[in-house]
Length: 389
Ligand SMILES: [Zn+2]
Image (cartoon, rainbow, N blue to C red; front, side, top):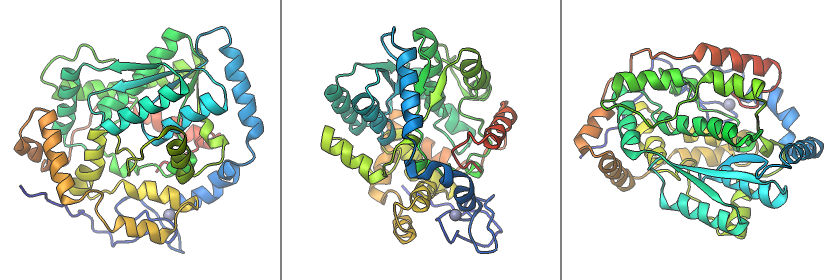
């Protein structure tokens, strides 16, 4: 079997930022007269001065923790934490329980794609911290069909079924349990540069049930009955503003590096690092390590490494060196390709057929315009801590 590499179809001359490693594989990238990209400039002007690498936020953190504890004092739990087994949510659990004395309701979604490394890490952490883990098992037959539906669209962002399920479950749990705080592991330190929106063309926002339902309607071949949807309205408006459920990102109030997170978790829990971000899950490992680079010419490490470069955790040279090698070698790619085809119960030829589809040209229903307006308002209010372009 051949594993084709698609060259990017662009007329634009190649250019890479002089400060980070974002380049013209993001077709919307803009450079200033010094060859520095708009993300680096935005980071310097808008994000870094306030974030200050997590330093000087003790007061904000204390106020937040006191508030969470007070609002949850008569309940079994004072906050909700979704644990993927990945680095950020694991570190958040460590801080929340061990350092901050919070009592999170800890849940994990088993959408059928867990890799053993994620399950082992989850077990090590929850065992040692003595927290009960609530696992939500998705209906695999439906998840498999929904996943195939996304492959059939030709879109680039194919992990929407499990991402949406995660958001929908948080909305559902916060309502059922009456918990007012959701701990979100987003952090400027390792994630300030978001994946470019030009890499997500045609896909609706992950939390947008209108988009998810429309793909299901057009591409699923069996009825989807057990899947839980949420909506942008519920997730972004009703929950926070009517029901008063706050999603908080406390990792931005403390100082750490990617390196120090790994060290703390390995030393204290025997946590095992799994390499590239999102490689704790078979599907995202396949999509980000093989599918997106070879079908679309997009290397997700570019944004991840750029976050580390501009926050001063690795040098630009190191990032370029890492990017000069493919995320997965040929044997690993071949092995993953087989595993994913087998898990989806399709032939490798069928999976390769999806790899060679023309890019998706369908406009799915979505509430994207509302999301964009929301992000813009948050930026103007200084509440958006991520560089979304
Ligand atoms: Zn840059």
